[in-house]
Image (tube, rainbow, N blue to C red; front, side):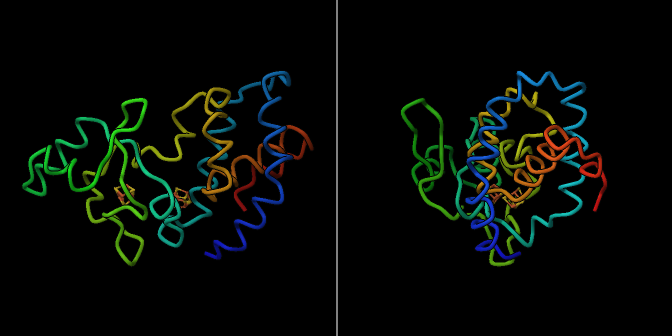
Amino acid sequence: MDLKAFRIKAGRNKKKYTTFLKGLHSRKVKQLNAKAKKLNDIAFKKIDCLACGNCCKTMTPTWQPADIKRVASHLKMTVQQFKDKWLYKDESGDWLNTKTPCQFLQKDNKCSIYEIRPKDCSGFPHIHHTDFLVGREINIPNMTSCPITYEVVERMYKLVVEKDQSALDSK
Ligand code: SF4
Ligand code: SF4
């Protein structure tokens, strides 16, 4: 995947799609969440995360206590050792990675702890299980980092604003 070209395209359309998402509640779209789920499925089929890896390269997951305990145990470390080595607590109390790319990202964009990765990672970009209107808050920043989020927002714009049903085609 050409991430540089993606960043240019996403940056160019950021304002248009941010305005669209912020005003989406007033459009009263029928079955919005079902449409978002369908678009999410299409985007996941179209975009290969292993050819991207941009979330693991540029963002940090939020580590829940259960995630830390599970992964630390897998690595035969104590929770404290794990935190000391890789995490910090931000001002809202969330445990985040100290550095990017993530310490578990491999050269082939695979995750070395894939089966036991944090819940935040396995659910990312959180479109399929979040109310789309509520999820706007994270989709707005994510759409310029995550090609799947961008694809969903772009298709939603096409569907809702341009009334173009081809946005639901899996092409
Ligand atoms: S734990 Fe794995 S999936 Fe999560 S950010 Fe790190 S490399 Fe990516
Ligand atoms: S979830 Fe988004 S940012 Fe992460 S690898 Fe897949 S397309 Fe890229």
